[in-house]
Length: 243
View 1 (cartoon, rainbow, N blue to C red):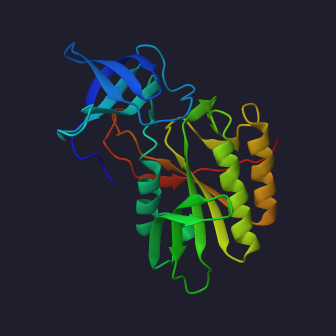
View 2: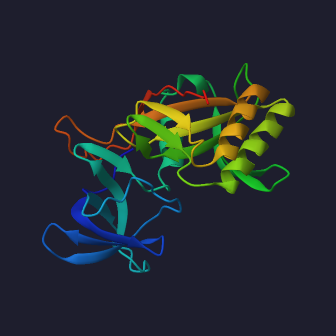
């Protein structure tokens, strides 16, 4: 998948009220963009960072710009739009990139399930040798020294999702936690025990119970080091669950 149109480059002035960001475009114009990210965005909002916005001509939208990418350090790009990972994961599975999830004939999104009234990101079915597979997708953008961490803030919702995945395994289905690594500087993914210790504990319990964990990194830049407009998840990244 690609961005429909070329992105607009600018400089971040500030993010505020969680869903708003003021950006100075290359021509000097200051605009307010929608920030589609409910997390802390730890490490992804440096002052005066290079950012890239998509633009919509939909007259019903209150804000015409959406914050998509940020340069977290020179030459290192992250995708902060958390509306993207589900589509990225689905496209990668359908293209056969994710070997661990190959062979399913049907993929459905946002299916209600579980005793805690959740919605699964992707439900895979129709495999000749595997049961239905419940896939929860998480966006990884927090990087510290080449290590990627999830979550970037305490997440009771994420903890709930792990409990729901465990329950599906107990019922005899397959459950997968899928990390969409949307940061070009991340070489390995780890649970962020220093941020949410309970999430790390639950993740390890989930793996012991039979929940699988995979991680794939997006190709966010071209050979020249600049954003290429590509959002494809292209290569696996190791997951390290050691405390």
